Length: 462
Image 1: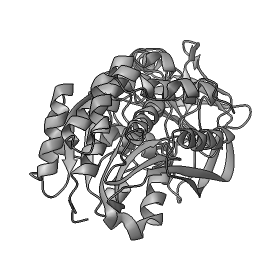
Image 2 (image 1 turned 180 degrees about the vertical axis):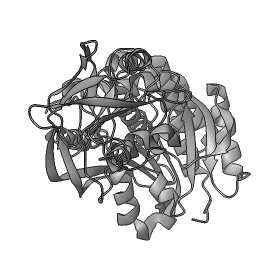
Image 3 (image 1 turned 180 degrees about the horizontal axis):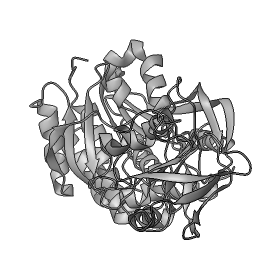
């Protein structure tokens, strides 16, 4: 794979930053961080990276050849950017999966098509499909109140909307546990209203899981308008029948990988500041918002720091995690595989909430009044970023290492439109706005650089 435009992208520092970096031996970390942030906003490097990833690779389903090509792409890009160490760490994923045909329709009393998409990991229907009466529930709790055997031979449908503000424990439980709980009560298939905040007639996928002791049944998400249509039909008719055809393939054990790149610290190379994003995506769109934007943000932050004439004091490590969408598998692998060095991780954070902008700085540290944190907060203020009120695990893939004691900073992004787009065919590059992703890249480069230069031991109790 060639990158004909790459030589043109070498960072040419502007006059202000050029003056600072030329005298970086005496420039303060705060002034250099501010200049790096300005460069992040002026260059659109993060957007350029996301553009290349989503154009040259496209969707990147976990364990697929596309995800592997994305990993190789990232290794080459890190090499061009001059990172000191670059490597891959491969791991097995037991639930390899590939999407197939997916259709649904109401067959009676009012025949009409429905827009659906299979949940990731769903088992297939028989080739000819399933046709059955539905049992519709307005909430997941209403379905869970039903006794075992009460849904025998029926297709369970849950039309509960996603909570305002995004994912909640309830939203996650509907998708991940709904199929097995429906099957426990005798259902032969499961449909849910998409976990999304849009009203477009497009369905949101996402991973599901099955309890080992319960029969596995086909599972899919309905577009929001189609779930609402079923609600209206259920208010008018006692019995509704649906035909469902899903033909995904179960691939058994597949291989995914984390891609890791480092800028070696000049004074404390064993101490690590980690920036993460996930490289895999669902297969309906091109994974631009989730999480091509995050990849662009953290790679751009690393690239800007790498281009300074003097390396950071501590090591900056960028981790592009694999197999996040099916269950944070890359994040868990990292936490387990790097257990012996987690104590050297000064702080970790992840970009996995779209393009931004970053609105709040939340923390997952014991000493919330640490002077370095105060400096980072102050440096983020010109970007409009406020101090958060909630604790943070740093991001989905950071969660497993945070649970083992790694300190975390959560750069909380605006997600007003994130759940309109994520896990859908609408997750494409045209949704990314330069100003938004640039601000996020600026926030991450400030946080990483100041954590490296000022640093401290923020250990937490796991």
